[in-house]
Image (cartoon, rainbow, N blue to C red):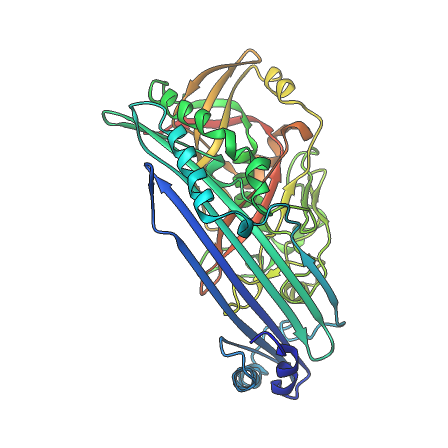
Length: 477
């Protein structure tokens, strides 16, 4: 059905000011071994296309899984009908066609293809990791999983755009839960956030093959650990918690459509306003955040967004100063601000909206040892396990799986149920140290949700460790 899709699109497209086709083909396979038992293998395939029409000041789109000429013609007709209906009702800037056509391609570099290794071999690998997670009698639940996905997209326009992109990604997971009486503690593999583009080489890159014993040991260790103290301390966050902090208190507040009010009735608005860009100090001078879909291997890398805009690395925050929002072409036109190429859709039957892609905290100059030694009274937290943030993406409260106290510049006792709270508008201004490349990790999440109807999408985050001054930390139940 893909053969001749460009010809069929041109035959079916209505005569309008602008028309595009975005074809999406997905394949996924998920393997899970829990408590040594293989769970049902889940595989899925999905394919379809969305046609977008801009005509006479109106915007419309329609999606179809019928990729025949007749199916595309019907979708084009529906999109044109919506464009006519909205011609007098569009928000200014949303119905402006792109200025230029684009051509190009992108493909994830893959060293060891998923399909090159037999299913039985991959299941045996998970069984082996499961055995290593069951490291003691108090381990009551343990699991190992692999989630592989491949997504192929084709973007075409009547004025000559032609973009092909092929993405391969792998999400490896490990989890071990220890119990004694009424007390249960869980440790996981980076909070299931050690996800990257690539093939089975991702397992070695992320440390999946050697992580299980340490995860199980720390789960058992937490059973005997005292509760996290409730007081103000300096806070050292590991990369697998920093990525959640970046995601919730920088990424979501800076989405331009959210700032413009598009998410107000669903996922909330933002404390950030349009007049802050170019003048607002978001954090200390150590805060440097980039939007970088060009970074090899990161979970949301691409060469063009889903509206055909070329992707490039941009500073969002530089030396603490807020520079630009996470807004795609139409949001930029509405707001009159420069943004980034981040109009993205979760599938063929969803329209592109402003989304995070690879949003990264750039490394600093401090080693891990230097950061620890600089803290007189603090706490080191790893691996997110809970999050809560208000509807303006400002006041937050986050919990972690594991922590150690820092006393007199040295790591001390392990504590359980660690939490901390703060306010986005001031929290990043307390950033006093940023880890060097030696602490930097490439991570991501496949589950970022936004939009109505909801779109769950892959987001990449890369970060070093970081130190924050005088933070409210507390223990949990």
